[in-house]
Image (cartoon, rainbow, N blue to C red; front, side, top):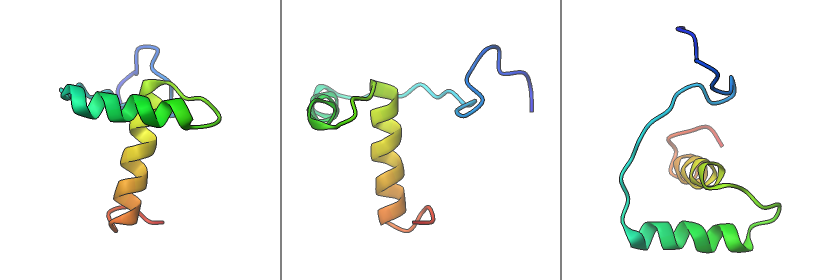
Length: 60
């Protein structure tokens, strides 16, 4: 694998996505009630991993 240029080794792949305000508002609402607190990137990873796992795309 190529050098990560300072990216965390835990998440070396960076992807840029576009979302609408409705999705961002929902993610922010999730972050507001989630403990311990998490940043936006962590919230998106958590939500995506949970959905993929619940729907059989990742091992549970």
